Amino acid sequence: MPIYAAARGKWKSFTNDPLMGNTVILEHENGYTTVYGHLSKTTYQNGFTTVKAGDLIGYSGDSGKMCFGPHLHFEVRDENGISMNPENFINAGVEFKDWARARSLMRVEEDGSIYLLIKGGLTKINKDNCWDILSKNTWGISENDYQNLLDLL
Image 1 (spheres, rainbow, N blue to C red):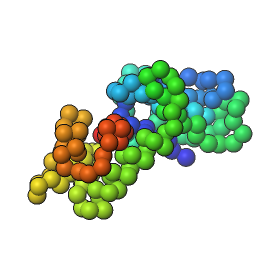
Image 2: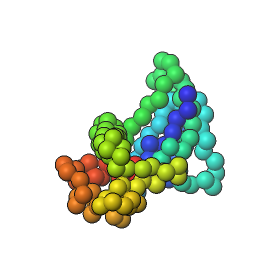
Image 3: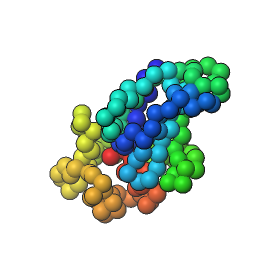
Image 4: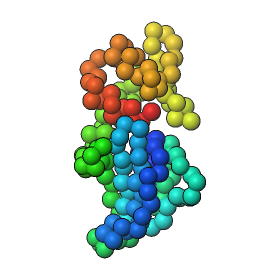
């Protein structure tokens, strides 16, 4: 089964961990890392440094001693290497996108660019303007949800 990068980032490492087997770690701009373990194979290539959200990074498998069948071990770690609940990151961005799409307020281009309908026109959302636009034009978005949404941009 194909495994895709959860967010834009850089290849930090590819190792054959004794417990998790073939493991990819991606480093993201906000200090977080994502970990993908027990892979059967990866798309890592020397000299290839960056990935976009949704890029194929490998295939699920059953590599490593702590594996009892094919699956993906997925983690989100903070800047101190402490594992966090990935559902907090996934839900915040997905819920906002679903809310905006349901109201025909958002368009996502094939290249991953996100546009939000504001005052009759489409405005491209990026890391530089995201908080300013969302805090002034939406209701109920917290700074934490905003940080999670940035991972999807």
